[in-house]
Every structure is written in structure tokens, then in C-alpha cells.
Length: 76
Image (cartoon, rainbow, N blue to C red; front, side):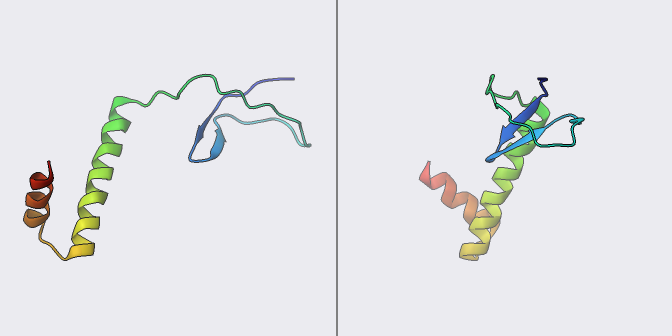
């Protein structure tokens, strides 16, 4: 028996290191703690999410960026 580290995200487990086996193994996946996201990566993901929201509004409504921003501010 041996252990390897990885991350569970979006319904999949991603192993972070090479596994030196060539046959099938029974495994147990243990969720230890939430993965820590670096501040830089978190900021990048926030910016991408904001951009996706803006482009979604623009593509669905044919609004200008200024109109989309004004509408968003009026809902707050």
C-alpha cells in the first residue's frame, strides 16, 4: 500500500504525481481538507467569471457594455 496526493474538482480526481504501477489496484479516496487556492489563481478565476457574466449579458441581449453595467447596478 502507498499514498499519492491529488485534488478532487469538477467531479474528477486528478493525481499530482506519477503512479509507478502497471496493473489494476483497489483504491480508497480520502477527502482530507479543501484544496487551498492561491490568491493569484483565485483572483484570475474571479476575473474570468466576471468576464463570462458580461459576455453572456451582451450576447443574450445585444446590449452595450455601458447598458449592461447600468442594468446590473440598478439591480443592486
